[in-house]
Image (cartoon, rainbow, N blue to C red; front, side, top):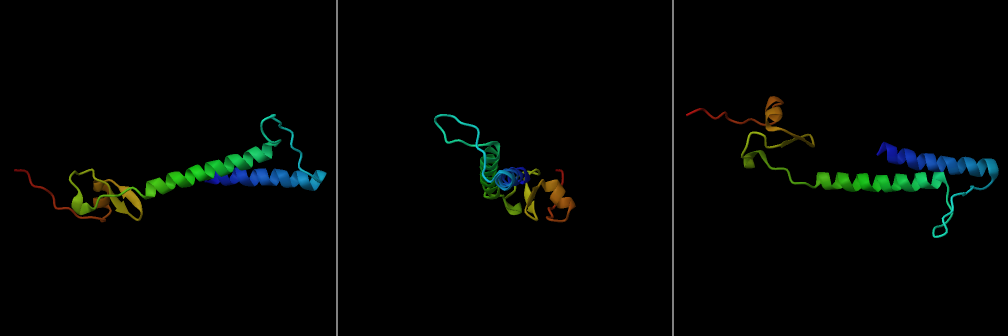
Length: 105
């Protein structure tokens, strides 16, 4: 997220410096099938794309269902602690959950 915002702010700052120094933004990259642009514009667009990708990826990670401790079947079933998924052993050590130990038969 920091990189995405840094790209956006850097590109905006570059265009601002151009506008203050020269009076206009100098666009110099020209493909005949696309509008003329500059490196600052590429930085802004890249930052927006990276930010959108990061936000979509985070949204998918937070919507995954997490099994409840009562639904667990194995000892490595993840549990939730302050919004983080922990292995069962770590959660037991932190006192987040308590599980009776199974005795050997």
